[in-house]
Image 1 (spheres, rainbow, N blue to C red):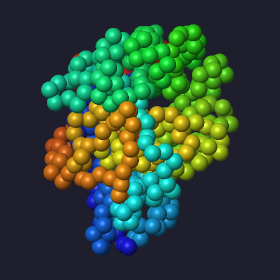
Image 2 (image 1 turned 90 degrees about the vertical axis):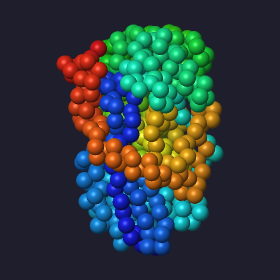
Image 3 (image 1 turned 135 degrees about the horizontal axis):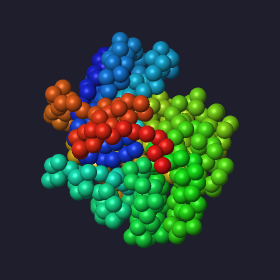
Length: 407
């Protein structure tokens, strides 16, 4: 088997004006589709971020991929020295091998350890959609605790989510804690909750809030990136008894040892986009299990290819012990012919390969939208800050700048 062609196809899809600690999502978000085709016509697809740095890295890898045996991945990974570019290619190759042998992608990764994968309902404070009639979910403004309960009701009613994650760092911290309390009141005091302020709280504020939360009648699974550095996380963990999770400060294998030595985190939130693809995510799961770290899964504004990849790799990760995150319910556009759906908050991955097919008409429409538009595109925390802060001008806050800790 030999790869004859690798295509790199940037696309732009509609994004709701979701808020986070950096600012607000713009109306268009960029992603990149990678498609590999063998000389005998087998096809595999992957998806990743859509900024120019990622696209350039993928386009620069074309000559390394074309003509290669799709089983020879380790030499390719070492040649690239770029975990994000390799991650997109690895996903496409896992899909390719699964399709070629009529096996689901999770079997290419070593076999599934769970039949279905649980996801959290990922809740965002947000501005009102400019085109509410075409929004995928919750088109209204959500900038209060009461409005967030209404947003969460839509997630629970449509997707059956049993775990709820609140993207924080937007309102004053005590108001976000009140939001958690109202969510617990509405959906049950035993409902697993989590909050992610993206580093906007100081250690002192996070300590105060954690102690307050401990005295409340609700089930908080962990605090995700509450404070703005690895050292701050270590200081916080010496003061509170909640588990601390991260996807901001442990994002490469070389970060794991310092995090363990400092006792800075309890849970690493994996992500096949920048942990070296689907196979890299499985390696991370092995490392975390060896070091007695918990594993969850981070998400971003992804389309159906990534959604399928997340479900397959999660099915093959034995150490993963928390419901995975997913932006997918927010997405009004997609590049797959049959969008994935949640039942009781879960997805049951199917094959062959990733089990999805590209919708060629939508792929080309979203590619044209990328070429003609100005989509939000980021692949790092620093680029995220610039893009999201810039998008604040679209909602009337051109003077807004991210600052951490804010409280």
